[in-house]
Length: 381
Image (cartoon, rainbow, N blue to C red; front, side, top):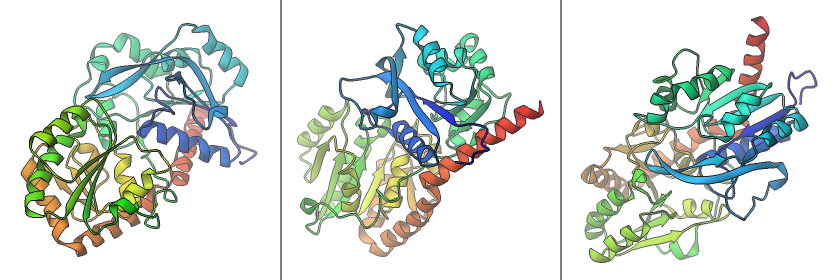
């Protein structure tokens, strides 16, 4: 770490963290790890979710209780605080120079820390949405918080557009998500049980309405009749799992394998086993780390042409974009890759090249540069 750095202690505040898994959790963990490599003192401040703890618990400060709630077609978390005075005690003890909030408007942990913070406040907005009632009607609560945030980041143009619909008076920088190119790599060994010559289509994600898995299953049902040598592998769990299983049984669809929860250690091998990665999400995707994971694994992608995914996938270059909720469009895109190995190889190769621009080392460096930029700007005021 540069000894002349204007900051040495960094807190990353998040309503989502391990042992629960998701895109924001990945973002926070890798940012923390890259900062530590550079010699910074870093702590993750989050809530208590379940009895299990994460492997990096020594770097984690837990306060309050994380409760699930439905938002934007998915399950989110709010952190309920019973002893709000602990916030002040934590900030006084650690004396952070920079506090970096993830989704700072999610109640209630970030709200309490922003109000008590005398550090440089940086916020990253991850979500993409068309409308947000809390943002629209919660101005009396959110605008004072917005004004206390010194620097604002969005992970994609679609995430930036979502937040600036409601808060447009200040600049929002775009710094994207990243991917671990050592963990997700074409060199990973495929799973033996899926290395039998069949063509594997992979889906990973929560099995909920927003992810659009039912449209992939319906397209696969039609494809399976024409191409019996294909298989659909589903990694993840969620509230619609039982409904999707019943649909498959009712329609006698063969070759669909529900793997349930897969450990972080095993997940790269599922990507290695895939011939095609498919994410038919319907809305609410600001970036899609799973797309970068597929690219880093050298796999061609079929994804819905929603705003967040268009920020990542270059159509016909490193993936194919299908019309959302359109089974026939999804069928056509998947079929073009099923029958054309050269196209699969081309898209996979191009995706791999793009993924190398999104290493966590580069993303962490961009965030640190942004902190310095905001510090410099504040000194001029």
